[in-house]
Length: 388
Image (cartoon, rainbow, N blue to C red; front, side):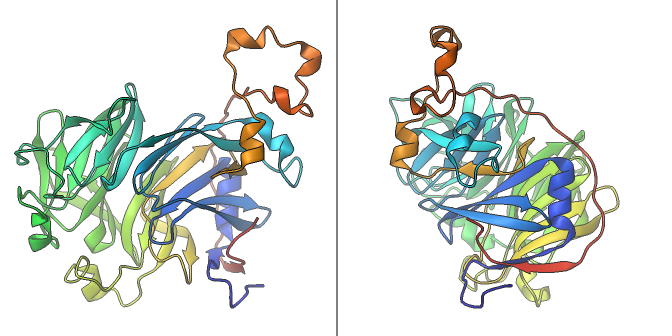
């Protein structure tokens, strides 16, 4: 039963847990408005939404056994340590445990989308209108900025926001404008957005309504036109967008798996930032949650909707081959007694001391497998907002 006083409550279609189970996946979702990272995982025939506290979490990046989280002025890097799951409650429930391994101070740069690549972690630095990487000596390392941005300054001139990776390298970005003055993108936010190929600085598409989350998938370029609440496929040659789905919310955050697109929706606050955009004119109901669209037939097949405290979603990422993960924001005892050792060091650990009951030998060893299949059926089930 749903508890009326639970601010993190949600509802979901009955097939949502079936989809996660059959695909063998779980989701991680960020909501900077609520200050939480949400782990969405199937628990029998219901969805368990598990909340962890972070300071304004926005961009997320997932790569095999790594999870990166961009927050108000830091980037957290967490590593999956499956052996630690034996310490969790209830026993034998979890199949992954992401524990902090590095926290880097970036300063308040308004980190937006991120992606793991061949050269490490890439991220959008919205305040300085550039694409960056990290090193241990600097707050950030600027690697690229649009040609229309003349200088590196903390003025959020174009609201650079979305990042699309291709073959381990950054390839596409989105911005809400092409101005070179402080906050200039706000003047024409409803229709001033652009989609850019960063290799040649070519503006592929323009006059977009708050574009976000460019993705290269199945040999096609996709983008969310957030101001229209849509998921669209992009004709790279002509720059034309072909919407395949209109959704009841501000679309932001996109991941694909098989024929399915997992899309974040936000309610859209009635503020100066969001007023006058198209969706506020036509959508009488605007929701917050994760919607699932079959890109083969353009149909919405499932959703999870938050009903109270969570009103905005930023990123949606898939954890392939992981069904019921844990994410540790901070746990002194668990972090203090869990270790990751190089392979060569493991040879010096006696076999009889590698058992998981000994916290000094909680060793990281894991291989991820992917199970890809489909799901059907749809009815609504209500649940409590948090599961652990």
